[in-house]
Length: 79
Image (cartoon, rainbow, N blue to C red; front, side, top):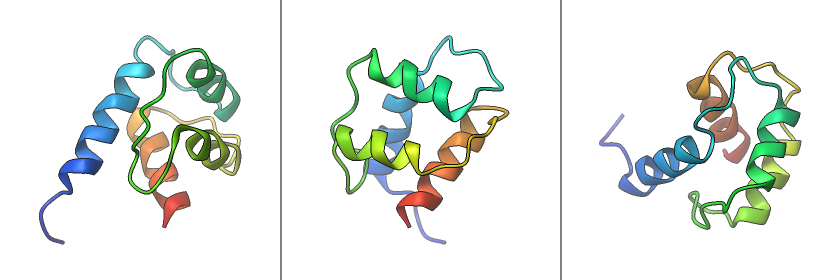
């Protein structure tokens, strides 16, 4: 419980902006390819942009039905 973390909220919004226009469902590979072509947020909680791509490669291949499913998988990978 508790209040949402403002840093996490901002990180999620930044990531969503960078994935705007990506057709869902999307595979892990398609998401990673898109993120390699845009400037990544440096501060997903506890990570750098390099860490983010590394975390994505550790996820299952998907497909992810929508951004929220991908975000939840990514957060789980960070736990």
